[in-house]
Image (cartoon, rainbow, N blue to C red):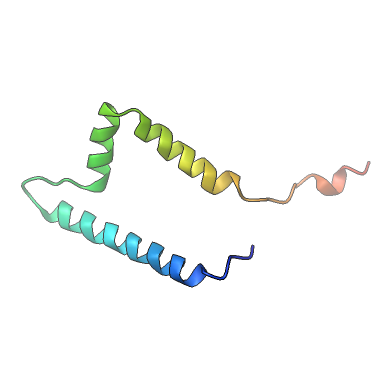
Amino acid sequence: MKLGSNKTPVMWILITLIFAMIGYDAWACADKENRDTISKIVTNSSRKYLIIPFLCGFLMAHFFWSQHLKDPFEEHKSC
């Protein structure tokens, strides 16, 4: 898979976002009063807004179904 010419800035943005989310989650987990972690916020919001689980599933399908995998039965189709 070949990425575009702007793969370096995009990868740094993603890495920064991931570490920011990890930092926020660690800080929220250490807060004894509220403990509003990312998973708690998403779970509570999903009960009120049912579109959130749908969009999460849609996003995951977009990430993984877009991969072009080799057919494991391709070499046996000539029979």
